Every structure is written in C-alpha cells, then in structure tokens.
Image (cartoon, rainbow, N blue to C red; front, side):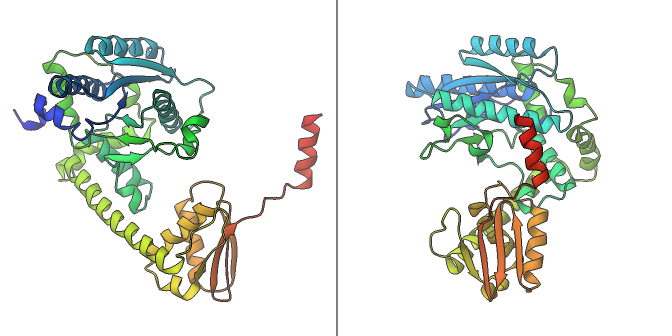
Length: 366
C-alpha cells in the first residue's frame, strides 16, 4: 500500500498539533465531512494524550455551522454533535440566518462561516480557529487563484497560520475593541493528503457526511477539482502545486521585507490615520515596481475608509503615477496626488450625493 493511502499513525496525528500545547483553547471548525471529521477525531486523541502526559491540554470546542442550504444539514450537525460527545469534546451548532444570495453563494457561505466561528471564539475567550484544509485543498486554491489572475500574495496559497480579520467579519464590540487579542486561523493538515484522512476514518470505523455540493459543477472549485487528475498525469500533482505555493510564500516574505525597508526610507515618520502620507516622487519612482505598488497600496489602505484595494485598480493608478504628469485620483477612500515632486496620500473628502438622489431619499423617509 502506498503511503498516500495509509491511515495516519497516532504519532503522526499528534505531531500535526505540535506547538499548540500551551494554548487556552481551540475552536475546531467541523462540518461533518471527511476532512473535518478526521480533524475532530485526531484533535481529541491529541488532547487526551496531552492530559496523560502533562495533566492538562487546551480546551476543545467543535463548532458546526449549519448554513441551512440543504434539508440534511440539521441531521448532519446532530451527527457531528454525537461524535463529539463520544470523543469527549464540547460541541456547538451555529446557524447562518437571513437571506442567502442568488450569486456568489459559496463565497458568502465561507464569509458567514468564518464570522460565526470567530464570534464563538470571542465568546469562549479563545484566539485560535482550527480548520481541516488539506494538501488537496491547497492545490485547488492555487488553481482557483491562478485562473483568476491573482497576484503573488494569492499564489502563495493558504498559510499554516494566518490572521482572521476581525474588522471585516463584523464581530461583537468585545472582539473588535482596541487591544483585543488577534484571532488566528490554524491549518495543521495542509501537508496531509485527503486520501490519508479517509484511510484514517476507515481504520477507526468513523462515519462522515457527504456534501453533494462538493460535486456540483455550478461551482468553479468543483470544476477545477475535476482537472487535478489530468494535471497530475502531466506531473502537476497536488504536491507540486503546494511546493509552488511554498516558494511563492518565500518570495512574498522577501518582497514584504523590501516594502518595510522602503517605508522606513521614504516615509519614516508615524503614519496618521487620515494622512497625509508623503513620498518624494523621484525616490518612489526608483523603487522596484512590485515594491512601489505595495507601498502605495499600504498607504491607501492606511488612510482610506473603504477597505482593501482591488489589485487591478491599484495597478492602473500606479502606472499613471509612473507616467509622471500631475495626478489627482481617488481610490478606496483615499485621495492620491502627484505634484511638484511629491506623492501624497490622504483621506478623500466625503462623496457628494447628487441632488436627484437626495430628493429621492427624502421622499422615502416621508
């Protein structure tokens, strides 16, 4: 039997959680599918082994998000609860309430899932959410982002540890208050093939749910997943794609280091919330294009009030600045000006509402 088809040994499973022993607790994202069921089983075994060795372990809370998109979802959440109880792990079921979008459903569901997981973590006083992303998921993610023309940051794939952006997830005031502990997403199984997790569940006779949406061709990820076997036959298998992502992550770290140095050289003073942030235009123009692009993006995000900057729009703005004529543009709530040898980024003035729209709004309030 090939290693890719073997069940994970106990020592291999426990090693996945190495370094987490001192944490207060972990929120386990458990949908009930094969990958997350394996995560629940292995995390429970790891915690029990820790208690035997150290007399303590992080508290585990398995959280199932019921999106309410399929009639089977309640039954599947109940099955996860029964398994968690059998394994000695606390369980919560959270429901995604409200209207569901007609398009972009998977992305909206992912956003809702992380929001609910983060809220549960905040209520529990934990700072870590653990997901069951595998090597196969990493490969799919890289293909997905490559197909959509992602930049270097996207082609780095999913990181084993990454921040969970509280401000974008609209958490409670307690979770988003200044000084609150940063919440992190942990992905301990990113180097494990899904086939090994399936073998582990079979070896221990643990049942799992089967979500038919994972085979629905309406979703881009499903269509890309069907390409993987053909790509593997040409040498581009999941391991190769994950290795590519790892190398992109190294390059990403090097570029971010260069951006830090550029900021220290061109604008070393503390950046105020609304700006202005000013760079010498000649020194900015001498930066490597990727470094200059990212430094500009950082400044816009820092002073703007409309969230992340779309890469394509940032690139168009950067190209116009490189052309060197006087520039005055707005992007993501920031006003960018190039004049008299200075590049300035500051908060854009509030947008004016056209009179016709103001009149229409007044009529709605009557």
